[in-house]
Picture (cartoon, chains in turn orange, brown):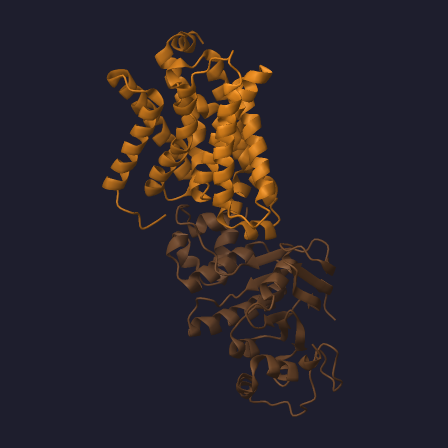
Length: 271
Length: 257
């Protein structure tokens, strides 16, 4: 397709196309973060992403792959550690989040040959994404969306009431594992866009905005995607006209949209 | 003898070094309504979770009829307000056709709430929707954890009546937990009195005279429950699972513990 090819040649359009791809998956997964109260969990996985960058650089593999692998490892570690009830989940998440971030930073400092733009990883560097990055974003998004569509009913049911879902014969543990896998993938691809510190915002702000307007879970997902698209478009425009950093600008415009919706729309009686 | 749906054979559950459920023997058959009563912390919820397969057991065995379909009505379900959900969508998540969902809601007399948000239902309405949801699955065994909680007194009697009716129409087995002794004694077939172990079990008239029951709930409660029945069973030695005059081993003296 020559048009898309031409668009991908331009850094601004490339950023926009990449950002839209992330908004596409951040919407539905953000809804699960909001529904299952997993905001801190998302943060923890995101913090470990830097370790993934170090690992990816060390092994000379695609950085997104390194990030995804580390995120999945951390998610599994969390599952194992949370069986031990002597520590509350938020304490456990706090320990792992910051330890993973610190280990990532220390590991990177041992690799003097590698010159990494740390700010880019912490806050995102959307305007610098390459064609390969765009391909990774859309590849990851396709996998996540396909998994979501396949597991939708089970995921929704186990989110509403885990024991009821289990009593009805749904494989609750495997579904939770699937959700963690999807999170790891989304964090790996969203990292370029908004960076480690702002990924959770991109997940939860559009979903929370959509809650005010939605009367069904599916509509909430749809509206969260729309909200994410508006935030990406608005943030990039802001960055273009005001010369502000792209990642934070996207989060700022998501937040403005959230304030606008909550200011204008009264709480719904239905839904 | 009707078909046994679930048989618990010497089932124990240990959690954190404590016996929560201690050597329980129990059979739930098609057509039964069994109510589990007992003080707080007696292991009632743990026991039914074991029946549902939600709680791993540490001793004994549970036999379920092959292909057993379970309908579960959990205790005070909390719907996340962040997740928009209508009764219609909640019912549809069972995978049943809309017509079946409507029919089930009609059975529990809440079909007028079909399009309502699940977050705006009263306690009694929520319970009825949950029961309807369990019904859509056409269960062989209906398991209810305190179905009357958060329901007013009139509603409670109606709810127990509904459960009886459903048992008759669907010809399923029912096992539930309840706190309301008076209603249980009036509406149930069999009572299982649990305090980690099975203190006593049997028909309501029998059980209210059982020494173990009297000890657990006190003379005052036992008497008031017995009076409620009006037709006293004059053989005060009679207790346990069987109707004949022989006392059974399901009952025992608490002093021996």
